[in-house]
Length: 100
Image (cartoon, rainbow, N blue to C red; front, top):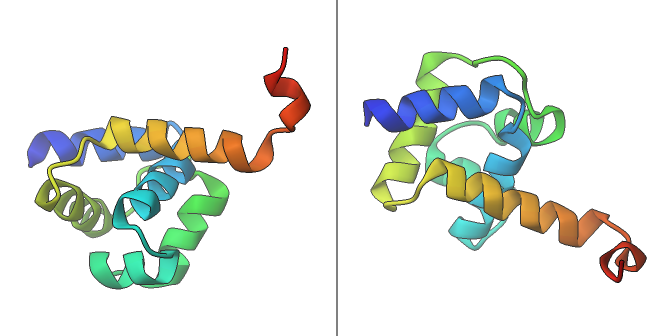
């Protein structure tokens, strides 16, 4: 689990927390509030990470809870970031840009 904790801390520190949370929501299959309940953190915490991306490492207990949730589901944090980025592209990029 130490490796996953370190990966998550690195992801949050580099500012990709938004995509990590978006990927976790996709993997969970429900909304942000349900994910927050599943991870056992306030929804506002996940919403803040999703909005701000972060850019710093949050409290160790939060990183540990995210890591536990990811490890229980045998997921890779970097794959969750990729899934979150893909969802972000689909939701926010203009379709005209795809045709280029």
